[in-house]
Image: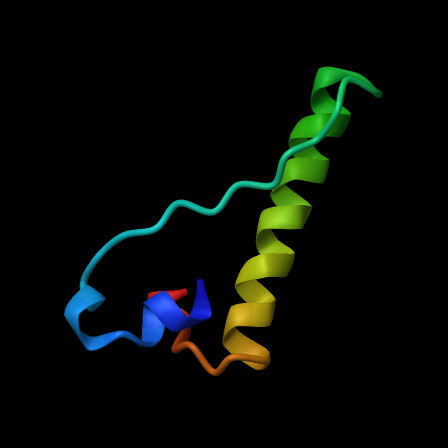
Length: 56
């Protein structure tokens, strides 16, 4: 993902990051867990892989 976001010919493209869950827990719990997982990926792209926040 980070390589794609640093690739010049992909600049301006949109990527959709999702955090999957399993069948455990109720719907609300899994929605929050999924969001936390997606947020973690975004944070790693910004901090570890130096993707600009507007692009992550």
